[in-house]
Image (cartoon, rainbow, N blue to C red; front, side, top):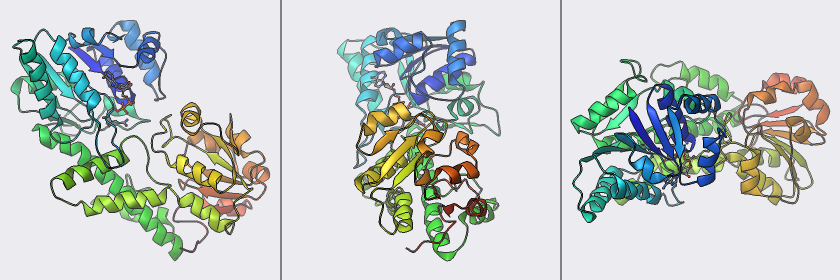
Length: 446
Ligand SMILES: NC(=O)c1ccc[n+]([C@@H]2O[C@H](COP(=O)([O-])OP(=O)(O)OC[C@H]3O[C@@H](n4cnc5c(N)ncnc54)[C@H](O)[C@@H]3O)[C@@H](O)[C@H]2O)c1
């Protein structure tokens, strides 16, 4: 099938490349001209495992093309996907301007029938709004075309976007239009297989809400475990053991139960805020989600609090090696990353910071800038060298290459603040390094 895609970000680009790999003819556009020009030459605008060769393959085969001409994309094929960013402000107001700008463009330029699919995460009722914008543009130019609108939220994980696109847990299609269902069923045929990877067809509003409910559930599990970690830390229990214990229960399952330095990324926080606001507008207070967000906010300060405890408040003048800046491994995405909170608190307290990330240095620098006391380090070893203590914020596998002996040698006051609970507490302590994890390691007062 021929498919047009608007938005070549983490989701749009991964999706485009996987559709092309499956044999569809994909034309992808983006409002960011340099991004498109780069992609036309095979240059990746973002870090996502396995994506670069897939894009190169699609370009070489001619099944994946990029264009800066949005009008050309409006005319390409039967199905047009909107995959632009939908940021939410601190109050949870979702900015739908780019979604609606794409819809308006399609309404202005499309010459024949089309199925417009919103893959961007957007509040319940957005597909209705898209439909209204489209029909407004069509009637303005006196065109009478059949344009169906479907919601098709995306559930992929950054860092595993290609894998998740190829083998999604499920595909959710929000439409009751038989023509739209038929097109999307054919489009997704290479990716789904009953019963383990089903295609779920539902009404548009249920599909839109499914996305928010999924992210709200994931955020809830993380904040729940972070709160349990607080209990474990004071009670002398080990939260990793507790996780094993409850994760083995089939009603609970082991995923998304890792305690850590707080969740970040472009989705969980913004979607929790947006869902809370959506419900409030309808007169419902989502008490659980308000607590989930508050707990996460507090959790992002946890590593700093542990250091404050360790140094008995005397953090000024200390040098902290920070390993990992991206909100999770295998991505360069810094949106809402917990590392940003740690860097700000350390610098504000007068500490020096030596920071390294294998992929997110450029994005981190663009956000934080050059600051007194902050050194961006090209390697993990450079960050470690001459530091007093180490904070592990993102669990990139490469950090495991430095053994405990080396860490103990390099640090001037050996202590590890393990924001992802990757180290074995007993081994770390045996190497002469003080160990603080999240809900494990040295006991801390409240
Ligand atoms: N990143 C994730 O892990 C993830 C997962 C599931 C769903 N989502 C949702 O998918 C959507 C896209 O997320 P993302 O992370 O890919 O965002 P992104 O910021 O990485 O990419 C969005 C792209 O859209 C482009 N764009 C903006 N306005 C445009 C326009 N008018 N026409 C064409 N292109 C335009 C931007 O230039 C950018 O390249 C969001 O709604 C997000 O909530 C994201």
